[in-house]
Length: 391
Image (tube, rainbow, N blue to C red; front, side, top):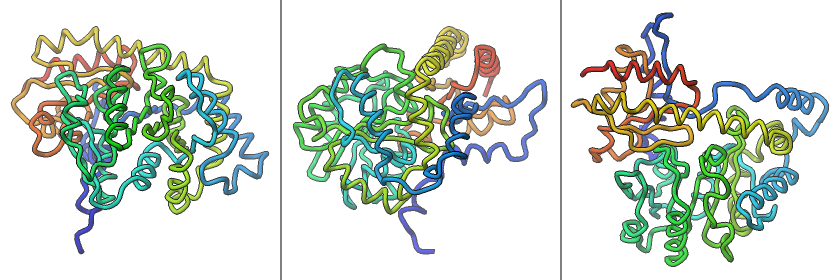
């Protein structure tokens, strides 16, 4: 078969990790602890599921095409909520709905780049961003984060050239968990504006940020939509992962270009998922607040338990949203470690090699733990198993 950009792209990491489970038997006294994927395993709350079922039964529109950029009522409601959350003024024509946040990223990249262009990605990166850039023929330029997992705008400046089209950030970060300080995000915005490129900020985990209020002030900047592109997902907040509902906030001229991509890929977002996102925003504010409190408590449990692992040589590099990003103390590479953890410890996690370039030695010492689906007891059990490891 002729080589293509797609077959040159690495395999989906979560699916690859799942294959490590093949043939492994887990016993009742040591069940699998799966901390590989950042997705809720529980369904949406019952009230939302009932509303979705009624919509599917009673409304013919639930089964028909809709506007390519999303339903007007959902776009309007999201614009209102973005405006309130960020103390800004965002209009419905600056918002588009997509079939998940990965599609939002793909659509934006397709609209702002051509083959051979470059996009700067801080490392460790979100692997699906890297995969799409590779498949689109866009060169990902690595921006290694510091020991605190925060990227440096001045280092990014040295990477910008005539082919650079954007810098892509994720905050709260996947895989690192760290929450980028407002002033850091603003420095990246100023850099992008000065150099005439775009700043993409993926805020999929915004609803689980430990800070109260707006995490940055970019929406308050004059003509923000000439530079800043905001990506969002409803999947985590309302447990709608299987319904694929994401969003973009950007300038309406750019959304007109993005519409071309969306029309040829999915035509429109799914109607039931859009209904669920709208219903959730209008009815589940307190429920989401409770979900956030639970995630923050699990984050606290990770922090409280770390001294046990630190005594064994582990180091916590980042913690927040759904993730803990750790440096392991063993001589073996993290990808080998992760494979061995399945049969030897009953743990499925992702190695840092899935979030870094192959030549980056840092990834071989790092692992990502997606802890959102573990309660305090589960986190304690995870730490018991990690503490007992010896390689």
